[in-house]
Image 1 (tube, rainbow, N blue to C red):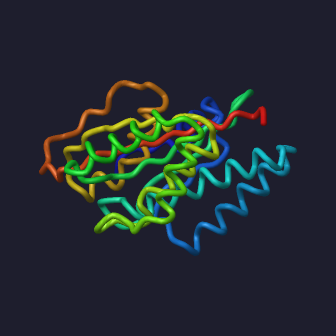
Image 2: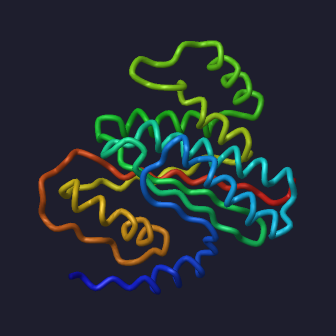
Length: 208
């Protein structure tokens, strides 16, 4: 049995100011329970209602993005919230097919180039337009995340070359390696599933 030190992850989360994290399968029924937990924590912190509302909006959109677009298994991914002095950061990650990476990154880049006015206009346009073939929601969720946060959506792409079952048990370690700037994880040789792990990160400033 591989040696796994849970305290190491606990310590790293403390160092990164992570007060909430979920790794696993997302579902509609799970969202309300997660949101209730976050509501309780933020209320106990004495956070402003306006900031809590922004966090809710961004969190639900990034979680929905995992639920709709994860490649390995529907709804399989990880999401966390960091609490820093002047801002919160919500980060979410999941696997997507390599054939979709360029298109997805281009959409994020295009959203980040828009002004507040342009974001609103595109959002209203998307609401009136049919969804893209084979997709759900026309990426409206990403527009909402950008609008509510008032900040760009950071994207980090990590190509994956390992067996799916092995990868599923390692995503948690991989994400922390990315966050904590540890030595790059070395993957053993295994069949290429043609997937990449995509991390989206959104900053929410505490000054309303």
